[in-house]
Length: 456
Image (tube, rainbow, N blue to C red; front, side):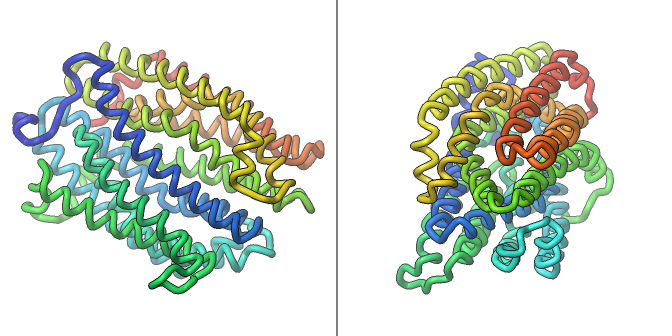
């Protein structure tokens, strides 16, 4: 079936730099929207105090941890659909998309129920300081309401990205971000016609925005080349689910390893006594500012996944490898320039997120140290996207597990707690582990075992 007649696009033809740009700029736009949402959450939380800011950062990590399965399903979905699009097989692509949506609905509903019932227990197990446990539990309870809609939204966006229809998720996420950001201020502080919900307004804004995004995505699917998703039977196919699962489970383990590792980092910082709240708030702020650097890297990560996957589907393996390295080189150069700017203006950037002098000082130190590792972060993110687009999720899984659980966490605990370097020890461990992670990803991509990964 001709892909162009169906309204989709294939990115295996033409100038590779043109294709990289066509895929990357909408992905960058989506990442920018997500960044401003995170920035607004932290900024509003900071106006309410360091305790609220620390709770928001910690709960956000838990929330991302819970939606890991959705991101994993999206990885499997994208790898399979991108190959089918590259090969010109739209019928298989539609079947995979339908099964992915069904799978996400079932899993999202189940995890949402678990979160709503066990939100207090989850917060307690995660190791929150007692002073912010009640606050964090209320946050997580409201966040739980958005899990189901967010699962389906994530899969819908992956379907569009895999086929090259990147402007649809760009539009959707613009609306989601606008609702979330405006909602933060209106629902927290009470702007007519809404009453003030206090810190809980941040979570309510997230739930409302994600639900709106879900409605928009389902509407766009019905008006695009994917409209036939709605015309066939909606029954689970174990064969297709098995294909998705074979790619998704290592991606899920990868994200679990990363998400759990970040939570453990917060836990380590929470053991630093009087400096724990300052350290946790600094990590929250540092991650938000650092997200500026992540924007182009993860936009190129998503572009690499689609371009590598489609080229493998079309049988152009050499072009798949070439485009992977080209995207990585461009990303590392751009990230290096941005990192230099953040390094120079670290104090000013830290000061925009908090009025607390101790938090501002520690945030600036975090930023200056972590900027040293950002080129390796870009290399890891972009090559990791290429590997996942090829269906080689096991390679990226082991890179994350080794760097996080063998290097970062033991080193952070040893430096921060045992040797007494405090938050500085955690920041140093993060830098060392990221250098290792980027190097492992580069070696894996260079060996080209991913060209033989079974993704379809």
